[in-house]
Amino acid sequence: MPEVPVLPEAPVIRGDDPRSFPHSVLAERHPALIRKVEDAFPYGPGQRRALGALLDSATGGTIEPLAEGAADRERWDAWGRDHFGASWFAAPFLWAESYFYRRLLEAVGYFTPGPWQGVDPFRPFKLAELRTPEAAGELAALDRTARLPEEEQWRALLHGSLWGNRADLGFRLTSGGAADDGSPLVADDSEALRSLLTGDGAGGGRTLALVADNAGRELVPDLLLVDHLLRHRHVERAVLHVKPHPYYVSDATTADVVDALRHLADAGAEAGRAGRRLWDAMADGTLTVGAHAFFCAPLPYADMPDDLRREFAGATLTVMKGDLNYRRLVGDRLWPPTTPFEGTTAYFPGPVAALRTLKSDVITGLTAPTEAALAAAGEQRWRTSGSHALIQVRP
Image 1 (cartoon, one colour):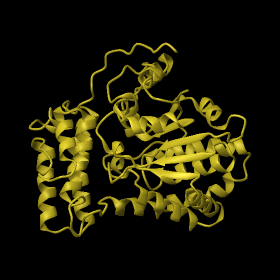
Image 2 (tube, rainbow, N blue to C red):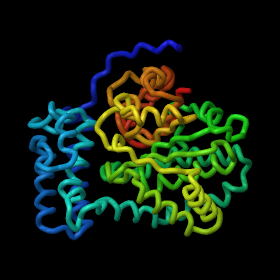
Image 3 (cartoon, rainbow, N blue to C red):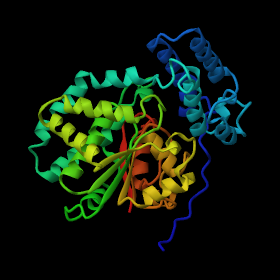
Image 4 (tube, rainbow, N blue to C red):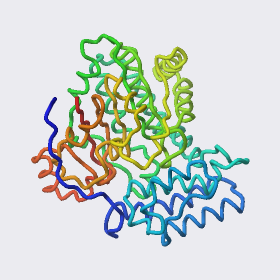
């Protein structure tokens, strides 16, 4: 057995410091999102009252349990027993964010029998993103990518998936946008990632588990990367894990996967061909979709249930996309940046990789020179601005 690095003490990230990034999310992003959702649908008086009450609670009130009769109330009562009655800013940031979105779904009647049951409050934003000129330009670029040698195609699609993580609707509510994707990676294990995924070029029973993050313009390049790996027989099978219901504004659900596939198939040229291949791959089981309930839990992956642990253990590689998955993978703590990524992920049941654009405080696996260079550059917001990214692998 390899030696597991000893991890330093690291406090759980909370939002109680008014100068902190988590505080700005709770105090600014969440209220802005409530107003955005309220404006996007012709909700009736009941939903509007509930959204107003959530706004009051989130900005100056205390955390309250879910309504009586909620199917998942018992679970949330157990997860939140130490936080009910306290300020949102005092709870662990990961828990507070997750519970905010659960309460928002409750407010709009997503889980309640009636006309609004199952209506995704974030769907208009996700669909609008697929219709932008930027989205069309990204698909048109595939025609040029297809003419590159295979290894260059792989690198282009990998970086498309990585930097596609900037297409995060929640992030853009309070962000001025992300920097040019020419920014250097703060960690780059792309060669190790290629070795794990491609090997000698034969599928050889390899299975890729890709845990998706956002829908829309991020999910499309994720699917294109999967298409490339399947088409070139680098993996024999792929499982795309998504959320079982709406979560964190733009997080992908099964419905969003279907929207993305239709978007690709309707695009024509190389994008259309990729969309049709992926559609056929889903039809024959080469590409499957998973939507485990744990993906909407306010817990780190270290606490994953046994059935999900077995799923990941059976994969040749699990790729965790995006910021939220990274926070859950390594633990949402203020780690010293040089804390080994291998140490924070030692519990994971198989090889794991992270593709992430940095949009929150947590970071591990940096070299001391990289940390020093970021500090010397005076980039105080490098952790949260979306201007930097990483590719990390624990074989």
